[in-house]
Amino acid sequence: MKTEEKVEKIKKHAEGETHREMADELGISKLTSQRIMSSFEKEGKLHQAPGPGRPKKLSESDRRFVRLLSTQLLWDLNVCQASPNT
Image 1 (cartoon, rainbow, N blue to C red):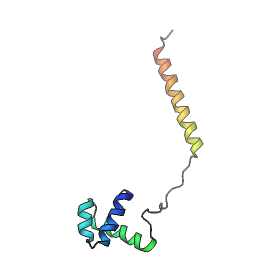
Image 2: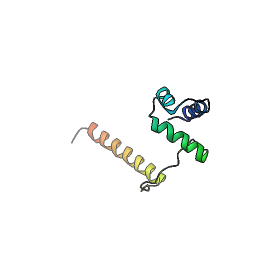
Image 3: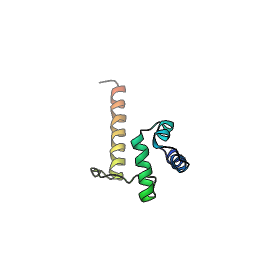
Image 4: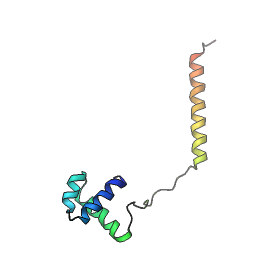
């Protein structure tokens, strides 16, 4: 859900709309509506902190290198396929 939608939801809640009414209008579940308000009321935040997850195995420079290498390999394959076999 976009930040603008969350802000709109908080405004509507302040005006007295129920979670169900806001959820229906925004196309989200009632539970999601309640979670957004609960998070805002407790922490004053609209953005959810990133959850725990598996750490990345490759650094950004490693990813760029892999991307470059794969591009070069694809180019070499295309050149080999295009040239006649002798």
